[in-house]
View (cartoon, rainbow, N blue to C red):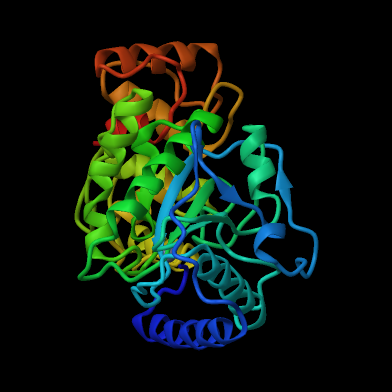
Amino acid sequence: MTTPTARMLLRRRSLLAGALSLGAALTTLGTGAGRAWATDGPLVSGCEAWGARAPKSPVKVLATGAQKIIVHHTATDNVTDYGQDHAFALARAMQTYQMDKEGWIDTGQHFTISRGAFVTEGRHGSLAALDSGTRIVESAHCTGQNTVAIGIENEGTYIAEEPRPEQYAVLVDLCVRICRQYGIRPYQIYGHRDFNNTECPGDRLYARLPQLRADVAARIGGDPAAPVWPVLATGETGERVRALQYLLVQRGATITPDGAFGPATEGAVRAFQKQIEAGIDGVAGKQTWNQLCAPVAQGAAGAAVTAVQSRLTDLGFATTADGVFGPGTAALVTAFQGSRGLPGDGVVDARTWSRLIA
Ligand SMILES: [Zn+2]
């Protein structure tokens, strides 16, 4: 979930638990039925099936596909009711909480997997967008990523406990389906804490993500290794710092990319971290890079492109840092990708970014 602090998490947890108790009192208790399967992915019960309320205002459907998947836990109890009725009650309780307490227009996430391995649609339109493969519903599950990432909530609290094997198996299936539909590569599966200051999805579920990427890659191919980022802090100098500074300028910072990590750069990092609800420490680490390094490709222009070009030059692929991503830059990116054993598509995605910054 999105709540960044433990205090708020606990508050949410108790409220959600309260709503669930109410839900359980009002609905027939779980049937104990097994999970529903489909050969090309898990069966997803749409908003109508579980009795969703209408959104407060129309959901926004963006004509761009999803770039990544973000895994969450609901931070609710690890219930032992594995029935479909419970999964539907959970979906209603979460929607009620998020609309009435958070003030959102609808459920925050795109999909929810219950402890009993039933999958429900979250925000209206998520399933139709998934089926299209070319659209994403703007969501509210991860600050800074809600227009580009599919959010999957896993019922339970996975700080000290593992998800149930049945639940994990359906998570793999759902990720496979989402990756196939949108052309997402397995390394683009993340945990909420990779972007925001939160414990979500819990230490145990987060520790399962390398396995999740590998299990998805085993089904659809591709490299499952997550991007690795350097840690840059005050006192550091060099071309990596300059790239960081260009990326911060792209996001509105008014600093001079001089390759020296001084007080102004630290201030810009802190301001960006606040904006994206990352941990605020003034150090450029995983959350900062994951949020800064949006994909760029031919046709793009701006300081992020200058960052790409300055790094290419520094790494032996000389070009003019003019901030315009033309065919020449694309050819150099492709050559750089080949030199690093990456698929040479000329697109600077998270993996290519991480190799440029490393
Ligand atoms: Zn989360």
